[in-house]
Length: 341
View 1: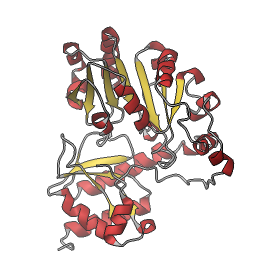
View 2 (view 1 turned 30 degrees about the vertical axis):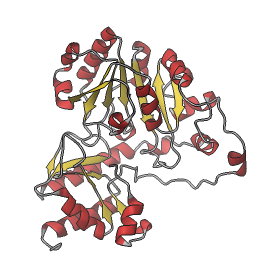
View 3 (view 1 turned 90 degrees about the vertical axis):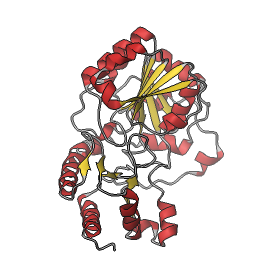
View 4 (view 1 turned 135 degrees about the vertical axis):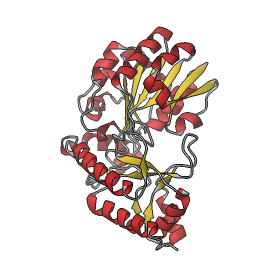
């Protein structure tokens, strides 16, 4: 189960989609999505298969072009890459559900974030061909300490194993520590995965990329389809405006602090140390009850009963603009004061 099922909620509640506040998915609420019209030529012609001209644009010149591979959403390459592996893979939990859903011919080993963060040397006891880490993770927004990440890189180097670092939410992080460009030049076994879906709020366009060593990029291109990107998505890449987004991580940090403060007053217990555009709480009742109440009032949140490490009394809330956050807080207070009875 993912968040963002806004059309289903609209049908069930008879509330128009445009009037529903969706706190269940983690799209960027601090961006004005530009109008875009698909040209007939983008539909009637085959899209480009040589994507080199777009490589440095999509990464905002953070990486060299030869170290980039553009993909139709990160889920696409997650499935392709996992299917190409064998033996054991390690998934650091909590994680994106597609790491568990992707077809795989080997064994998945699930290791909790807290163990890996505090004792990465435990990896010496495992044989694995790849380890998958979401950075920051979902749904808590935790980020592995840099020291732990460096130890994982060192150990995986010795085992000749890949590290897949899923940075789908990295653009929301204020004051980032890791220099990914340096990392991929020093370590041949690391693959950085990024989705632009969340930050640019364009899930319908399916745009993402991976950054890695040149040999890995060549290998991954071989297992991908030649016309994997629609031309209208490639045209959208040309106009990506990173400069206008520079202040967004700081704004989200401020709103996140406000939301945490307000909800902790209601006996909601914060989980982890969130760095992304969402927060997870443990609440003193079944989250599905408040979810149902909020949906009837045109507000969606994400319950976490489908996560093994969480349960029905955990909820995740995305960070939105202040006026929308106020509406959510007001409705939660109404619920807590018994006005839902």
